[in-house]
Amino acid sequence: MVGLDPTIHVFFAHTGVGAWRKPTHDASKLQEGTMLEINNLHVKIADEDKVILNGLTLKVHKGEVAAIMGPNGSGKSTLSYVIAGKPDYEVMDGEVLLDGVNLLEMDPDARAAAGLFLAFQYPMEIPGVATMTFLKAAMNAQRKQRGEAELTTPDFIKRVNGAADRLGIPKDMLRRPLNVGFSGGEKKRMEILQMTLLEPKMSIMDETDSGLDIDALKIVAEGVNARRDPEHAFLVITHYQRLLDYIKPDTVHVMSRGQIVKTGGPELALELEANGYRDYQSAA
Ligand SMILES: Nc1ncnc2c1ncn2[C@@H]1O[C@H](COP(=O)(O)OP(=O)(O)OP(=O)(O)O)[C@@H](O)[C@H]1O
Ligand SMILES: [Mg+2]
Image (tube, helix red, strand yellow):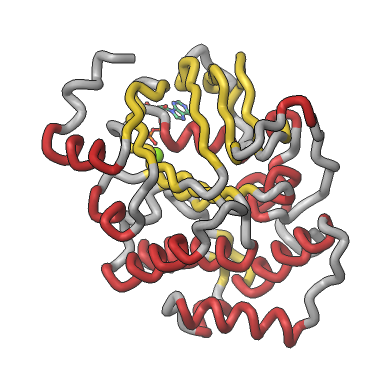
């Protein structure tokens, strides 16, 4: 992307800003109805021996909203980074398939083009890049990948303004450098604005609820619920039942020490709220 600081590439490649490489299709791996499939994933920190994910296996079906809960440090954000292709981690074993496409062989921006989006737990501040400029670059990069024409400026402005209005994001924020000086909740709203505009088929939301006020939480939940259909799936990482009151998950997974140690329905989140993780801490 011309004109963007190269450092953006690393952290924002999930939105599709950057160079493209064609996705690797592996039709034999396609399982009908499965959006995201993670098999026996082992991951360590690239420069250290520290293993974070220990044979993690997880499946999210098309149309499904799956929640992941788990103690601090259990590897939830690491999992989301590895799916999105952030460097710094080394995959030692396992596979990650998005709609049958092997993500681990793809650049982060190609993963975004294949329909993956990660809303970060800690969105990065990017001085010098106006939010509008970033959003337009991200949207057009994806359109290019899909063989579609670039958005005209009026069309882009109309889409951004419409989505920003719905999320309660004031216009002047869009002229400011991306996330710089934004409050915690404003940064989270900005992640959701990106998600809304990019229309991913698989959205991973890493603690998007923390920092959001109650009105924003409801708006985000409405946005997710409105897109619950066979073309979309969501992986919602959260510590709080509160979010799950608004986005009722189909499945709840408990993560501990780099593995999924329990899978259940929405009632599992209520059980965790009542009992904490004591039953699961030693399970992995
Ligand atoms: N680059 C790194 N270098 C060293 N340790 C790391 C690095 N990245 C992650 N870790 C460690 O990996 C573990 C998992 O971290 P991660 O951020 O994935 O946890 P989490 O489940 O998202 O926690 P939280 O609920 O607090 O967000 C932690 O112990 C963390 O300190
Ligand atoms: Mg985390």
